[in-house]
Image (cartoon, rainbow, N blue to C red; front, side, top):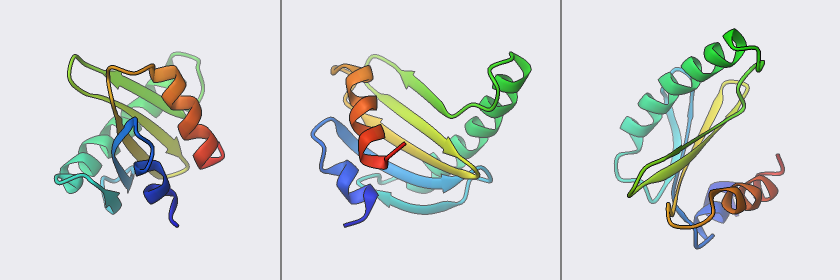
Length: 105
């Protein structure tokens, strides 16, 4: 079973998109607009890495974005970008821990 499939079996996970920093889609589960998500998150990951370095955090590894109806956790590993949309009404910290255990981060 792929890690993406394993992630989407978690009740808190809505969808998963795997891409790269150039915005190229590699794989997706349960995301109808995966190409657009990969493109936007590829750009966002590059901006996050640059911002992290400029602010003294070092290279950004994770970005969490929440709104009233959607939330996602963006993981950056090398050139790979994993975008995981999650239930915004659940504990984001708890979800992140479960995801990190599943991805062995």
